[in-house]
Amino acid sequence: MRKSNRIRFKHMMMVLLVFAATTIFNSCKRAAEKNSEKIIEKSIGDDAKVDIDDEKVVIKTDEGTFTTDATVYSWPKEVPGDVPEFKDGKVISVTTQEMNDAKNWVIIFEDVPQTALKKYKEELETEGFKINYTTMVGNGGHLAAEKGKLAVVVMVGDGNATVTLGSNQ
Image (tube, rainbow, N blue to C red; front, side, top):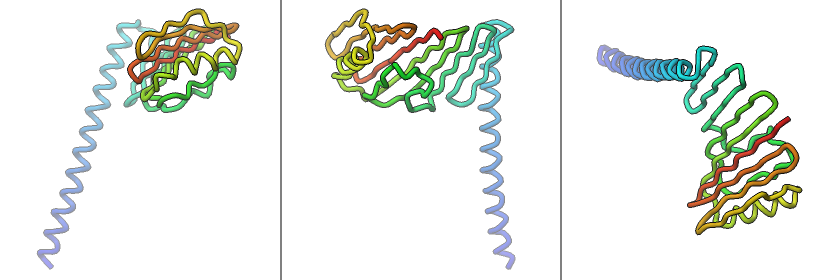
């Protein structure tokens, strides 16, 4: 009976140590996030509010809101329907910026095939976008397109892509 109590005590102590270590780690991580928030707020100005939570950063000012989230792995639902979804590759990060009447998105992809830019250019044209310029170089290139109050810039290269969208409401 006495040996059984010792084993239970050891197990209980191990559980408590793991819990304590986890709590300390999370507290240190949150303290680091708070320090980073204060540094960013000071650099932007006292009216800025910064919230850092793991892989998501939200910055709010009088001029608008900037959000970047590395945990979003899909095409943003808020993107206007006129803009065709870039479907080649895997979304690894989405950044959103809202200022006054404008809203912008930066969507970063990986595992993008070489044919993606040409294919997306055709999709944009099908949706009525005017292609302002296209540059194809080696494994990639970039293009800029517009339609009314929408602007799209796409850069593709080395298996990665960045799609930047802008909308003036």
